[in-house]
Length: 459
Image 1 (tube, one colour):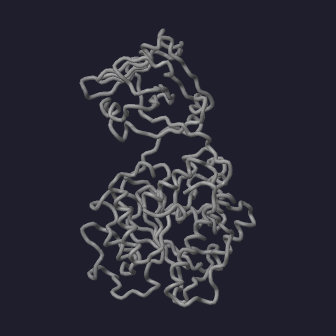
Image 2: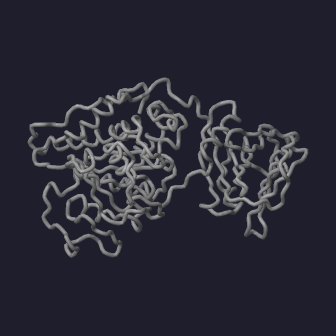
Image 3: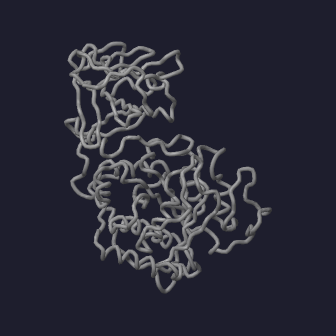
């Protein structure tokens, strides 16, 4: 299942936020290109209470919209309603002159005083009319019947309180010296368990969550430049179809470190799509060969080419990492959540350490987009991490936010630190788990920059 994200870019979203006297958060309820352009579907997303924003993306590139301080009814007074137009660097707000006609609703129409009207024709086609009249302050919008649009979204408006907490709830140092220490920690790492030559980490997650991007990002950190590899793509079912294993090297051409990141088919929605639990267990237990192509009609068994009937400890997976999208963590379906919790339960029975990576954190918090060092100060991200923990069934102490390199052409110190810190704790989780099963090696995991979980916030 592909990620469903708002079409509103950050600049316009910031302009929209400025129209409200207090900080707000938006929670998307409806997106036309995903849910279908039906007015009945839009109406079904309204609750009995709540505040809402309707966004219409015009074909011309402009964004028009309306705010409702209460769910729409046949005809209601809404003195707090308003219309708006969004531009990259400014926003215009239009208040109602006649509150009794601020919002007009029928089974086949939703209108803001006739200035912005969505309506159905023959129950098959959603249309948009734009006008300027006496019910709102003059919008000066060019009037247009059947105005062309490309997207419609409905968002619930929630009070955000203070966007930032009074201080970080996890402590992380953000200097180049700390980045270099984390990097060296990975290069010199040797598993505490003498029987382990390498740590094999399996990345699990829904399509579009950022598994492959995380691998590329870690390699980019080590090489000191953004690596451009062909193992990333966009697909509703996910891009990775085979078991791919990537040794992490300190530099191009150097010996591999002790870390191998493994990518597999994306998790699906329920039992019938995506990576199956039996196939995942075959990978985890070391039976599946590198390069195995996942096929729903051909589960991994002894008949598969390269099948390992008696895998060694070094063939197996030593840590499972659930990769979740911060933009979607509140919207994962019940089937997806059930799948992840089932995987978590099975892996726990096998004593496999597990952590969660929360990706795309810069896309849900303005402060983090400006600088990732605010990742542990943003209130919204704290709530996203709590939800990510709940989705999988782990505690928040097992959740680590990361920002993958996607559009950048060069690496940055703070993004590197966030990625390396996640890797550091993955390796610690492996050593902590295998300490009870294996004799220690002479060179246990060195202590990298500390990541304190003591916090004034209850998690």
